[in-house]
Length: 260
Ligand code: 2AM
Ligand code: CA
Image (cartoon, rainbow, N blue to C red; front, side):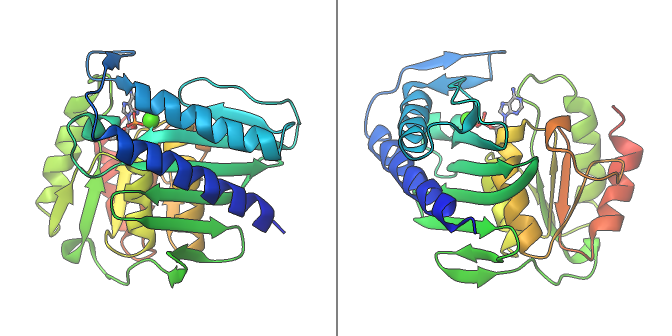
């Protein structure tokens, strides 16, 4: 039912990925947004323009919620949620971990998710009810049974406020598992949970960082909530995504550490 949307999302993600790879070979102009560590480049904007062009060409009435502010049509039922370059800090340092994230919300429900890692040519895709895939192969979350056997991942807020809480959680969880990573592209981190490379991930984020990854983790059999173990809300800036087994253990630590 949603395959026509999936195909356009993948085309747009590949186009943006090609812009990202080309940009790595140029000198980049880097600007800051809300804080000195909240970065944006001309490549973020070029990727968003190309994605918006392709979405608009195919679905002119659909709404668009995109990180760099491009708006679309006003159809009430369809909203694309786009991060044209997730992991901009990594990108500006040429650290090869960044992605394109494109999701579709239909009548308030996330139904399509695509995350593309151009450096590794990895296309993660999922449609509600249809399973999750990496380069066409089905993926599922890990079967790691406990936090103590897990590799997990998180991220720090872009405005640096609240970092102390994240550091406290980092310390506590580091002492209880195989390791905590801070990879720098939330969309891709969520896909790594979906395919079992990571067992869990948590962070405070914007909708465009989480939307596509949410579809991937859900379709791969994962468990998603906020830090208080309430149901996930895309517009409430919190996500804990795990394989089904370690979720309660990870959330228990976050609950006692990350007070809002
Ligand atoms: P970005 O690269 O698209 O900005 C890394 O921990 C994650 O946090 C990335 O997905 C990054 O997305 C996001 N991020 C960076 N700055 C942020 C900010 N100011 N607020 C919320 N999320 C941010
Ligand atoms: Ca971004």
